[in-house]
Each structure stands twice: as structure tokens, then as C-alpha cells.
Image (cartoon, rainbow, N blue to C red; front, side, top):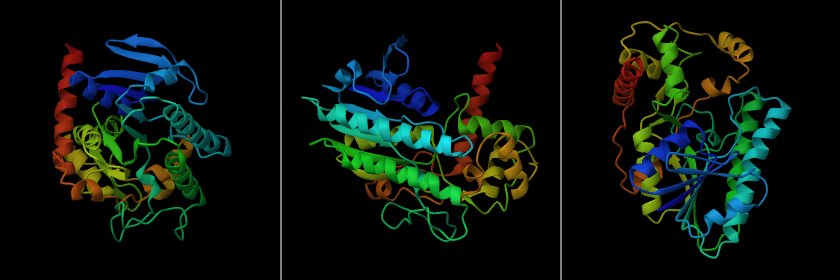
Length: 321
């Protein structure tokens, strides 16, 4: 297949590139800088305007858009505007380019987020019964801003004029991979230093997906006639305190320093990020994938963590040789 991947320079993009190359697919990455890395061709685009890059979509099999400013920042008005614009503009211009193709991609996989769902503890959010977030009583006003961005992001996808192209909004949870700078990498550093304890009450749910199941689900969505919103996450989200304990155990750490909510707020302020990333309860399940018979290889966090720790240790041994 020919895969056109927009915004593929992050760790999720790296996971997908490895997968498609292992299959022998051709991968073109739309990026800020043109270059060739191994067998991957990076084509310049700005995520806002049509250009020569749009020609890559004609005759492609799959378009995937991961573009968007990182949410790992303070939710200042300027950063919120940048988060919104980078997602909306890139999605809109990609849709415009696909609409101009004589032979458009068969499927457009558009990044979205599990953050679109409500902060809740009582029941899980799937695509059918899930409660949309943003107006829950008692949540910080800024949490609603990120939900509004997610909703706007998806709206642009559904409004695009791309006849005959299947569109899927990927409501992804945290993808756990062994890549440097990945979520798992960051959490593991904390756990190995004795800092990976309970955060706040520890009751907030963590939704996650192992990188192997992430790429397996992406391939599943490409191969089968699926469209609409799909949750990409393990079927077993778990409370943060339990999540952290099982990660520590995978690393052989018996203790993790807990952090009260006020400590999290202070630490996030110092690190120029937002507490929503760790305090919001994301209890999300992959209802549509399970209904279609998708089989997870790592449905349980304990097993996923053990696998990721083993592979991280192997990589570290190779680096130290």
C-alpha cells in the first residue's frame, strides 16, 4: 500500500511507520522539512495551504492525519488557540486535498482523542453510550476547552467533501510504546526513581493501549469496511493508583511517592503543563472494535507493562554495548 502520513514525526507516528515498513508498504510523511530517512520520504507541507504535497494523495491507499500542537503545555489563550488552529487547519486542508484527487485514498484515518469524553468514574465511555465532556459539574473550566477542541477537530472531518472516502475518527487513549519521549518512557522514569505513586485521589481512570494493539487496530480499520468514530484503547482501563502500582511492580519497585492534588497543580505550573493530563478520569472502552471481533494481544495493563519493560531493558542493553 501507499500510506500518506501527516504529522508523523512524534512517537505515535514512529510506531505506525515501523508497522507499515515491516509490511513492505510505501510511506510518505507530510512534515515541516523535506528529507529522506531510510526508505521513508518526508514531503514538505505547512498544514495550512495546498501545495505540491497534495499530489502524494492522488493514488494513495490510506491517508492518516496525526498533525496537531502538543497538549503538553499550559492552557493559556495563546496555546489553546494554537492547539485548536493546528488541528482544524491541518484537517481542513487535508480534506480539501483529498477532495481534489482523481483517485483519492480509500480511507482517511483522522487523529482524535479520548479526552472528548466526560470526566467520570461510574461507568465506561464507549462510542454509543459515552458521555461527551465539557459541561460536567465541578470540573475546571479549562478542561472544557480541550473537549471543545476535540469536538471541533472531528466536526471538520465530517464536514469535508470527500465522496467515496471512508472516514474514521481515532479517539485514541495513551499509546504505550518503548520510544524515547513516549508516555510510557516518561512514566517509567518516574517509577524507576521512586516517584510513580498515587496522583491525587488515585481514583481517576487511566485509558491506554499497547503499541502492538494500536497498530493492529489501525490495520484492522484499514482492512475492514469501518467508518465513524472508533475508540482506540484497551478494554480494561483502571484507576490511576492501580495503574501506577502495576507499572512499579513491572520495574521491580516496591514504593512510589504519592502526590497530593495541590502538589500536582504546583508541579504542573512549574513544568509548564496542565493537571488535566493526570487528574481527568478517562474511563474509555473500545466498544466498536470489540463488537467487530477485534482481538487484543495486550488487554491487561499488567501484561502490557511487563512486555514494555522487557523490551525497554533490551534496548538499554543494546545502547550500552
